[in-house]
Structures are given as structure tokens and as C-alpha cells.
Amino acid sequence: MDSMGTTIRRLRRWRGLSLDQLAGLSGLSKGYLSKVENDLKEIDKRSTIVSIARALRVSLSDITGDGLEIRDPQADSAIPAIRDALLSTDLDGAEAPFGDLGQLLSETQLLAALRQANQDAEVGRRLPDLLSALHTHASKPEALRSLVTATHTTALLTKGLGAFELAWIAAERGHEAATRLGEPGWIALAEFARTQALSGLGAHKRAGKLAERALSYVPADAYDVRGALTLTTGYTESVLGGDAAAALDEAAGLAEHVEFGNRNFLLFGPANVVLWRISSALERGDHAEAARLAATLDPADLTIDSRRTTFLIEHARALYGIRRPDEEVLALLIRAEKLGRIRTRTNPFVRDIISTMLARARREKVAREVRGLADRMGLIKTS
Image (cartoon, rainbow, N blue to C red; front, side, top):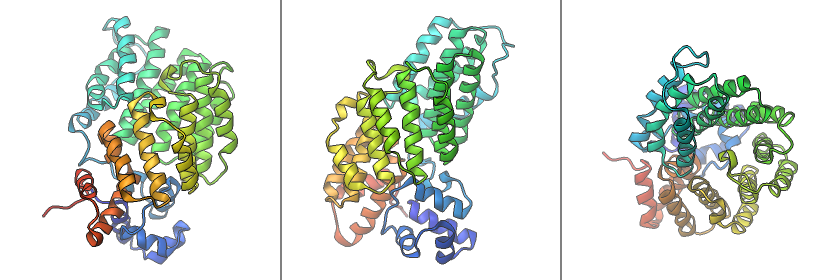
């Protein structure tokens, strides 16, 4: 699997564009793009990837890669079955109910928790049967609520495995179930899942619009859902070049009202707001602020492995941006890899950092750990 820089160079040549032309179309400098293509400069903003993808007329995944070579084969093998479960079912109740509904509700909660614990292979193995069975109980409100949760789990899992369109299909099904249920809080929760799927597709502007719309009807006391949607509006604003401060401050206020932070498996609370502040600071290129915020956050406060993994990655990005020693950055990334192997190895920003370190290592013979992590990411080509 190539670095983003190598992929961009290949796609640019495939399009028949010069560096000057790509620079003009993307709004980025020729010098910066040249360094990116030669792995001498990392890409550290999602907005940059979006700009380059639009200029090249390709999808985000064409640039970031889907991580096929380095993903968990067992988790990845579940994708066809999940796709079949979603495409072969509907909410019309044509099939007779099968499976004990009480057990299906418990399974829904368990798989959502397992996904947060980075147990992708196990979740992928069990999701297809759960989705198929829940659809046969769609005439019951509790089954529809469970479908909203199960499809949210599906959307996040498939998004993490690079199946971005399937993540959107799952989120759409959850929204359909919530709409049929007719309860504003669940509709808003399903809308949040759609915003996450859209972010994977690079449709940040629409994601922000959906979040803003959901905020207009989410119940006032649904602090977790309201907070997650507010964070989404702030982050999408930062990706689009705006100011996320007001939304992040509002979310921090909402977090003070949350007693159980992982309600609806959103992990919304003060620590999570800090994590989103870090991501927002990185998106606007303020690595020093991101590093400052990261120093205030104890990963234990995030409580689940998937968020801890994200925090360690974001912290590493911040330290790399302020040119801290490679050893400090690597230490964080290796910790992240231990918690979430696939999440870390497929992260496009991690891959770009390691690609840049690797290019430097050829000249400076830096730490063996760089080569080891690069090899596990598929960045070292073997003849």
C-alpha cells in the first residue's frame, strides 16, 4: 500500500496533469505538492486531502487507500455478508419474525460495545445475522430502536474498513428505521450516524447541514445526542475553513450535564470534547494548541479503546507538527497500534508521518521502530 504522496503522484500523472496544474486546481503551492509527492512533507489536514481529491476528480479513498493489504482479513471478510444483509432486507415486514427479540436487543448492545473495544473481526462476524433478524421484527418499536443502534455500529465498522459507500447505506437504513419509529431523539441519533458516514465520503458540508438540521428537533434533555451533533457542526466547520470555537464551547457546556458518558455509545463527555478540540486544532494547522490540549487529557478518561487509540494518534500528529523528536511520536503511535492495530495502520495521517520518517531514515538511519511500523503498514516494498 503506497503513501498518500506516491498515490497522488500516480493519480496526477494518470490525469495528465503537471504539478503546476494540480497546484492551480487545488489551491495548494507547487513546492508543497512536490514535497508531498516525494514523501518529504506529510499531509496533516483532511481539507488538504479533499482539495487534492477534487482537483484530481477522484474519491478520498483513491488517495488514502482502503488499507486492504494491512487490514484484518477476518474483519474484512465480513463486508460481503454485511452488504448482503442490508441489501436483502427492508422494513416492510415481509418475512416472518425469527430470533428471540430480547436476545437480539442484548446482542445489539454487545456488538456496539465490542466495536468500541476495537474487536472488529468479532463484530463483523456477528453483525449480518443480527441485521437480518432485527429487520423481521421491524413492526415493534424496540426493534426499530435496536436497528438504529445496530446500523450505527455497522456504519462505523464498515467506514473503518474502507467500505465508505456501505457505511452510508447502513446509516441510511438506520435513519429509515428512526423515521418510521417517529421519536425525535432517535431520529437525531440516526442523523448523527449519517454525518459520520458522510465524513468518510468527504461530504463534510452536507454532514454539517444534516447535523444542524437535527439540532433543530433533538430533545433538549438529550444532552449526549445534542452534544455529538454540536461537535459535528464544529468539526465540519473547521474542515471547511471556518471557526469551530463556538460549537466546541457549546458542546463543553452540554457535557457538564451528562452523567453517563457512553449513553447511545456516543462517549460524549468532557474528555471527548477535548479530543474533538484537538482534532479541530489539527485541522486548522495549530499543532502547538493541539499538543497543549493533548497534555491535559488522560487517555483513561476516554474509557474505551477506540477513542484512546484516536487520542494517541492525534497526540502523535500534534507532536510531529511541532517537530518533537521522532522517538516521542513513535512511542505514541506504537501505543496506539497495540490498542487498535487496524485503526492505527490504516490512518492516512499516521501513514504519511511514517512515510516521511522512512524517507528520512534512508539518509539518517533513524530508529529501527520506524522501519518496523512502516513494514507492518505495508510501506516497505519487497522485491
